[in-house]
Image 1 (cartoon, rainbow, N blue to C red):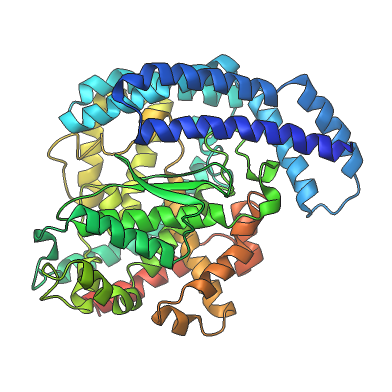
Image 2: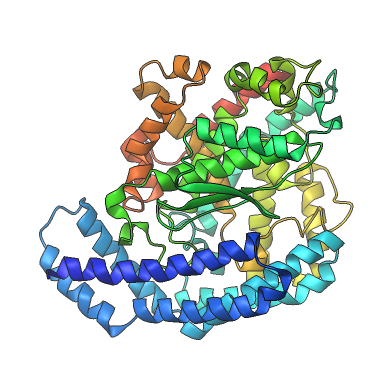
Length: 510
């Protein structure tokens, strides 16, 4: 056996362990009865210990030494070299994290997530606060173990978005604010009620699911390798490209919740299902830090696809010109007095609101900014957990001009902190910015793409995305993907131009 074959087998075993962990996490969020939370934590802790011990073992070190010698002199841009280089990088990082710290986090997560879910239902932040405090302490310990030069947030965001840190995010946020806030001010000044409120009507949930699943398949979701379930907070998770699962949630009146939740998670799923088969169970489809063994290179790159399909495709005028009649077949009474234009305007209303996952495209990133700023304050100790609801409400008023009436619609609305996902939020905004760069490049490089999208034909766009992004798995970091496919690193101009053009037209702005 060659050294590289030995390396592949060793990492494949790690991938299998991480996939087993992810299956237990999926089950905990979708199927597990409430009484199973504590024992599920023990199961996850055991498997997490085994996975980390496997990865940081002396055997891994010997395998890396041997394979590095074997591939010396090979093309540095090849998958082989990149797989070994990335594995060495993460081996050096994961060795710094105590196994027991990983196990404690794994034990706590399902219990904490269950307590969060109940606290959200009951508007009871006090019941969740002790678990959040424990998760925050574990996050601080992990940051200290990994190490950082600037801010403890830097060590945690690396797990999700290696190309950014606290300092670079502040610059990105300021660039976005410079374009978003004036646009929002103009929109609010021109806003007026729509002639009909489509969300004052009831949309049966079974039909919502059927239509959403039909759209997911139309844009490319393969149900032979995927499924759709219900969760309190929508998510996508994969166990190799051959088993990619999505969830959504439903509201009897607010049709966009489930539909765009499904489209958002389908965007993630398309990325996972589009990874090259040759990368299955390899270092280039394994998250060595143990969040999920995702094929995507970063949360931002992944989010670029969910936001692209949800917003730039799913909320476009072309989309509803094509699909409105089919939607009315599902809901003939509810949409009897509606047309594609009204639906287009209804799903694109800009309104400073309380809930991030229901936020419009103009205000969405303000929700992300306040969460990142709060995380940084929690990690550096300038904000305490018990003061979090008050700080949250103050920032909501500062950024969006609204104050949550209760904690369920405020600080308790997101699942991320309950599972220890400190550092994950920036990926949403980075994904928004990247989505416009990718779509702009696709329009430049794919002949007739405008016409195909107007006809509701999504294969040409999906093919371009698969060739330029999905197939590579984790081989290239987010900025490399951008430069390779768009000839430009991350920048906000295409995204702000897209928002300016779309909402100037929608609201008749001058």
